[in-house]
Length: 374
Image (tube, rainbow, N blue to C red; front, top):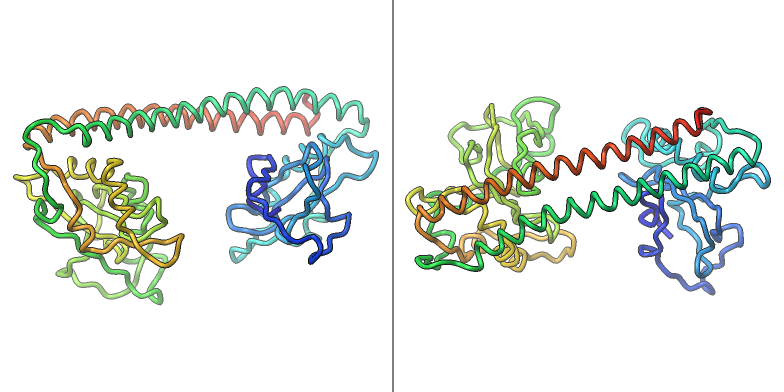
């Protein structure tokens, strides 16, 4: 098992790997069993994750060097109480590992010696607390699953309507290519030399500024490199941007620049373009480029030997098939899609707030349990 198997305070065997037991001898002490707590001891984003195995695995299973097995002292702890106890210090474990210089590894000695915990000694009291937490956490898990499902449904409803708009075209729609509706053809930006990266200076957009089909003007880094105000790489509010390199599912994400308050550069891995005002609205082109039909076309044209990173060329973007209705029709479609976008975002905000509240409740219950308030 590796660090990907430890998530959401549960252990998943989905991401585990097999090895030849005859070629790699494993001592019994390295085989995980019911009651063991697994702690991720390395990894950016995974360090410090804690989960307890509440039943024996279906077959002999061990962990790799990135996961630490923590076992309670025999007779001192109720097994499940011990698991909850380590979840309480999960954030502290993460902070200890990431300490200074971006360190993302936690020494096993640190894990054993650094953290202090408070607990009731009677096993009967530990069992009572486990019963309360189990019941409460089951309810929280159910509520969280329902909320996440509602969040997915809200997004799916929007995607379904988007697909319907661009697949069931009415009369008067003309088939064309992207380059034929553009006043400014797709053009890569400029990425200043890494040696000029700094804490201040000229802002440069990152891929995150466009990823997710929402423009984020705060997703920037800074450069001290000399710039030229006459060059093409300055982004303006209203520009349509598309990422030309990313993971297979994220390549070709689009967004309309907004909220830019000072001169800002867009990087080489992003293209900028603008439609002809009398042929296509920027908002209509944005929605069409993020529709399931065009997303499939874009990801299909992305290439690259690296399976986790794909690029789409300038030519592949310019020749994308685009459907062009009248400006009046475009305006009506954009109005409907904007309203649906606002409603979807409103629902997403509500569901995210509920998820945050459920997480806060979980942490509050754990705090009460280990401060003698339950």
